[in-house]
Amino acid sequence: MGTLAERLICQAPRIHRSYFGAYGLASIVEAIWMICGKQDPPFTRHKVKVLGTTRLIDISKAQRELDYSPRYNCASTIDDMVSWYHTMKQGPSTGSQESIR
Image (cartoon, rainbow, N blue to C red; front, side):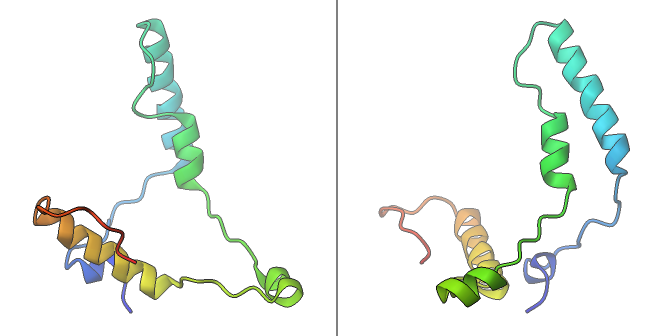
């Protein structure tokens, strides 16, 4: 399968920043935006929380009790992302845009 970076033939990020450093920087950016009377800062504490925490959800109970089976898996999702990326890189098509699936 490979990672998304491998499939796009690019390097994965090598530098990782501290969660607490990013959270502190976001606090500063939000304060500056508020002092300047601006709205919608580009970097917020909420964005740090969303992007900086792991979200793993156990679906075993839904599989067991509801006979749930996921429609998508990680490999097919990465395939779709790579396909979408290459489509967007080529520019807009003349036809209507349809979902990859």
